[in-house]
Structures are given as structure tokens and as C-alpha cells.
Length: 358
Image 1: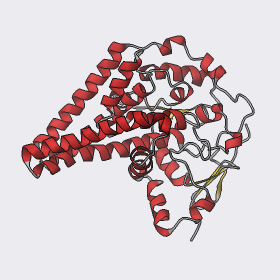
Image 2: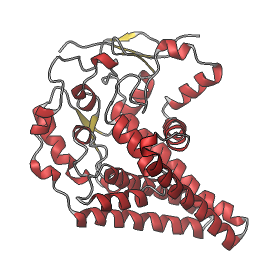
Image 3: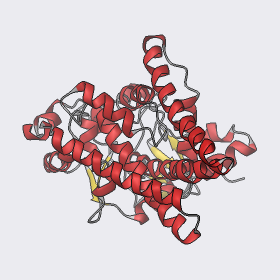
């Protein structure tokens, strides 16, 4: 395979960093789908509800703890626990929103809406942006909006504050700020629904708003102005930690020096769904909260696979396409390397660039 060099942070070429090359074949996913064992599509209602119940229990315990204490030594670990619990519930809601968790579409709808409440996500709005746009056009220039890179020229045209914001969001500590602004605020809250799905989207936005405002109203009614603090520490802080977590998760799925984004005319489903995402294996206990979401490549190949079947599907795909599959352990150094090298992108050459001098 002929490699395309990547640009380092000062726009100097780094020949040791080799992205995947453009390939003429395959362009679709049929042959990839053929290697996935049929049992990977088997769903268990009992298992799905069991995972949901466990996540709700962990979240409920963290929530109760946050309500009960103001001790800083307890608040911090409880915030961390609540943040990852919200993330776990969101992953289950994400699976249900794909109609992958259960055979019953109705049960998927109920569980999806319930599980996404603590992360303040309106399910039908999420389905539009994530299922239809992100999955339909993964890493396609001007189409996929999640961690879509700017070109050097686009960055140069930004104003001073926008440049500062970009450097923050694309740095090692900016994933939460990016997700909160670009995905949650712009694509969930401020999003104008298309006429075709307006009723469903407005309904789900109302459900989420009723949850957030309703919890606040109950807390204020019970404790007076102290309810504002209760709401902030039990709802807002875990939500912000969730944003940071999920922003990082999506970044490591699709941003790496070896992963290129494609111009519209050159993009195809194989490039986007196989070459454009990762299989990342976590340490023992990782899946208690993350439910195999890091085993992401088979999920992009076929959204119908339930989360607990993704490892088997991943191994089958990796065995069949070893040259094109990015499979590795989750490593902090890989994320830091990506945030150092992957700032701006040249879509025509497939090279990553650092920020221009000056």
C-alpha cells in the first residue's frame, strides 16, 4: 500500500506516520457484512434490560449520594461515578436508538428515551444527526459534522476568539467543550427539525426539557433556593462530565494520524465505515460502563448489531481485513498523539497539518 504522509504540528512532514492509503476496492460493505457471523445479530431482551437495570442502579446510587452530601472528599468521586454512569446509560440509549438493543421497536423507543434523559438528549433529534448523517456519511467532507476538521485556509480565516476556541477544543482537554458546543448545543438544542420529523423531534425535546426543569422544580419546592445547588451538583455536573467523556470517545473513534477524511467525490462506504473508525480494547472492567462502544468499527459496518455482540463481529472483520482495520488497546498516548498532530486537514491529499505559524 502506498502511504500518504501526515503533517506534524509545525507543518513539517513526518514520514514515520503512515495513514491508510486510498484503495480502489472494495468500495461497499457487502463483503464485510458477509464475514460477520449470523449469531452476532441475536438479541436478548433479558440481557438488554439487565444492562439497563444495572446502569440505572449505579446512576441512582450516585445521584442519591450527591443529594445527601456536600463533603468535597465525597463529591468528587461521586461526580466521577455519576458522569460515567450517565455515559453508560447514554451508550445503552444509543444502542436502542439504532433499534439494535431489542427486537421490539417499541421497547427500543421506550428504553432509548429513558436512558438518554440524564444526558439531556432528545432521542429523535439524536437519531437524525447520528444515525442518518454521521453513520450515513462518516468522515465525508461537508457531511459528517462530528469532529469535522477545518482546512488550513478555513482556520486562517477565523477571528482571534474562534482560533482560541479551536485550539482549546482540538487540544487534549477540549473534548467536553467541543461536544457541548458543537454537538449538544448546535445539533440538539438549537437544531431546527425538518418538517418530516418535526413532531417527533419536538416531542422528544419536550420530554428532555420536562425532565430537567421538573427535577429542578421539585428540588426547589422541597428545599427552597438550596434546590439550585442540589440540581447543579446532581444533574448539571454529571452532564458536563458526560460531555467530556463522550466527546473523547467520539474523537478516538474517528480522529487519528492514520485516519483521513475524504472529499465527497472520493468517499465511499468502505473508506468511511471500515478505514475511518477503530476497534479499541479496554482494560478489565471497562465494559461495565462503556458497553463495547469502543469496539466501534463493526457498529459502523452494521448498526443492527447489539452492543454485547460487537467483540465477536470485530474479530471476524479484523481477521478478514487485517490491513485496513485499526485495532489496538485504549492508550492515553495515542489520544495525546492525535491531539498533537491532528489539528487541520487537507482533504485532497489526506494529510493532517498543525497550526500555521503566526
